[in-house]
Length: 273
Image 1 (tube, rainbow, N blue to C red):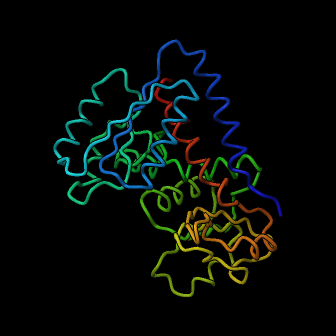
Image 2 (spheres, rainbow, N blue to C red):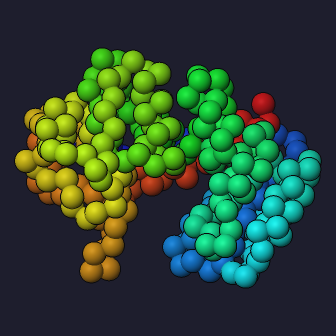
């Protein structure tokens, strides 16, 4: 078994980005919109701003109160779209229930949509048109490539059908000639699919959901889950048992998570090409 060390790969990518930024004369602007005070969002936002500082990027946080209206959020997005000093825009999710997040994502300029969540970005991906790609799926592909894990002709099973992970990942894998099955909460006989997967990718958000008996020998296992149990972070995969059967496996933490962050900044760099 070999670990797919996302922290190591992400660090190399960010080091490369830092070198490029030093050679770029103009400041690169990164706007983060955060509505409300979600505790998890607080951590993610702080991490992004810290990374901006480390890389020499002009990161600015627009922290809006919980009762901010949808119209106010949309007006801020319009303002940032028209600001030549802003290269990339991210709307931190979740947002308060009274705000239509899809409407907000779709207003972000496709040229600044570094999260890759707008309908334009998602549509372009499905059609094979160059565009920004959602960061977690993009990070997973980068990680597999780094370790020279072939995708062509392989049976890949994704347990997730979200717009952020499952669907874009499906399109990325299809484009690489993998044979892809997308499973979800309504899938019957899930183990039938997971046991036949050369590459198994889980993003269900249930601690230790994937057990040894669900994985075939020498499978590649990608754990996207981030769960907290008794104050400790763990993934969807029962790492202790599954790692004994897998040929490659991501740890949690230090697996897919760092790759997601790295891809945000890789997408940001694409705005200056």
